[in-house]
Length: 442
Image (cartoon, rainbow, N blue to C red):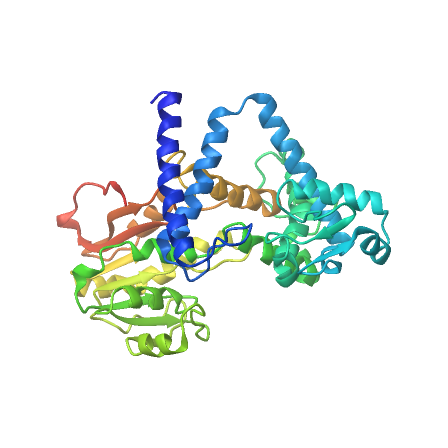
């Protein structure tokens, strides 16, 4: 496809996404403010339209950008990060009222900074929609900046990015020069950036502020399972009728709640090792209604699977902290083994793995791949770890066997707008082995 054809395609896709978002916002009366906000409880297609708009705009910029544009964009992002860190360091945001404006001089006097410097910094962040001057010498919040006061985890994420992630990232070349292929957690870019032999994991354990900032940054950089739930909702559940679905190793009832609402015939058993947490986006009445079709059980990692007659077992991979990637394979094996005999006895049953994996280049949308690469490189720079790829997970699945057969990946599903994949795993006798499953895009 030529660049001109691509541009025309992007234009058509952008128009479609804008119309979908505008139609919903008009119905929900959400477009009356300067900043268009999509409510958390809005339909999935509306959230998808918002993401598509941002993705397409980024693609158009990449298609048209010249080297000077690229450098200017990086330079602006660099200055924006420095300005946000400055605002956070001096706690400026909390001094600005959430509604109305305040003289810049009053804020400068309270936090003890030069008024002119404060104004210069606000004028820079205002170019990105973060704070603004409603009139000369006055500062006010925007819809983008106000949440950094009401939800402090956003500010924690910014401070981690500026004070830890960015300095570590800039030492990546030095780490390669000094340590080459080392996977030791104390020979990282982070260690060079802060001239320490203490691992990042140890620093988090000793410094609660760092741990809090890292957790906030992880949540904001795509380290969530929201997209996994959305991805699961797009599978062919209606074909199962009123079947039983077991959600194994779930971290909350959110996925079961979402699927129950979409497919009323299904019954769910949610197996958790920790106390249940529910999806706070549904009403109490709706939650009570859905709960009649959801049973919560406690089950520890690797315990025998006592539910033998389910149609589908959704297996969530264990959540790992930084520094635990070496034990990930063992934990996956520990969860797969108890299901080997279940799948052998019930050959119509399917085990669904829906992990977030590092995608192969250009198999997902550029923004999705960028976030996946961001997560992978952050692990390299902070702990010398890396994210798992599809081939590694398939090898683990295929290694689970008995004398008659083994687990086999029957179907591989992926989506261009998610780093999550879905592997449909079945028990297969050695005599029935056939060709490898090909990925299917949904």
